[in-house]
Image 1: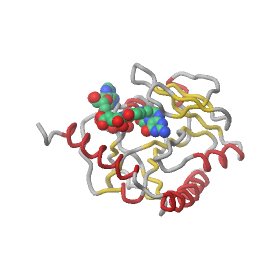
Image 2: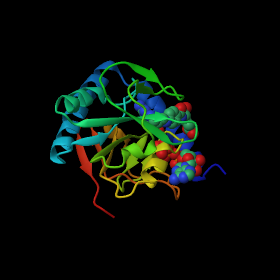
Image 3: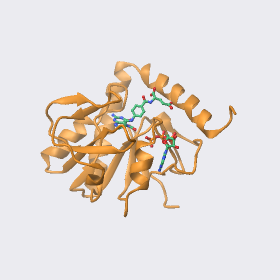
Image 4: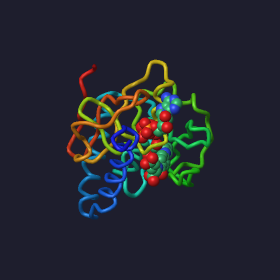
Length: 195
Ligand SMILES: Nc1nc2c(c(=O)[nH]1)N(C=O)[C@@H](CNc1ccc(C(=O)N[C@@H](CCC(=O)O)C(=O)O)cc1)CN2
Ligand SMILES: Nc1ncnc2c1ncn2[C@@H]1O[C@H](COP(=O)(O)OP(=O)(O)OP(=O)(O)O)[C@@H](O)[C@H]1O
């Protein structure tokens, strides 16, 4: 049925993907400055030494300036590589060559580590299409992060990196959806109260 969460999610993703696609260059540049500033602030506040993040695509709020800053400070970084079986492999950020995974997402060419490599990180930065103020997150629809977060023991803080207008009142939710602890946007950091 049209109003089932799965269908509402699909429609919402299409709308949000289009909204990202048409953002202007000046808007993206302005947003970039704030995103980097607030990612630096979050990593500093949490005093992280080891994080999981991702290499942004051109339409996503950019993570690379922050990753460069973090690596320079000796923060160890893992980046995801999509697998056919729905799990994520991880590879250390090395600031060097990039290639694409099976879904066309940018990935490093460094050493390939398995899904459990993420255990032990101090902070997880995740992509999202949008996030609700109760922490529910809408991803890009393959369940990679729901599965990863759902399988972790003692999950560290999880923050989604989104544009300001992607923090919304409500997102369609299903049982398997994993909430995030907060969001980082061009305007700031929003941490949700623990449920
Ligand atoms: N930069 C980056 N890397 C990432 C992700 C991401 O969102 N951003 N991922 C985050 O998970 C994983 C890859 N996941 C992906 C999930 C879906 C699609 C995709 O093309 N989805 C369809 C929509 C499907 C639907 O609406 O049901 C599409 O966009 O056309 C691509 C990658 C791992 N790496
Ligand atoms: N923990 C899980 N175990 C098994 N399947 C799952 C799990 N989480 C999600 N899935 C499956 O993955 C698919 C996509 O789920 P959903 O639409 O919630 O993805 P999403 O939140 O947009 O993606 P992501 O988690 O990658 O950001 C669905 O078919 C769902 O049943």
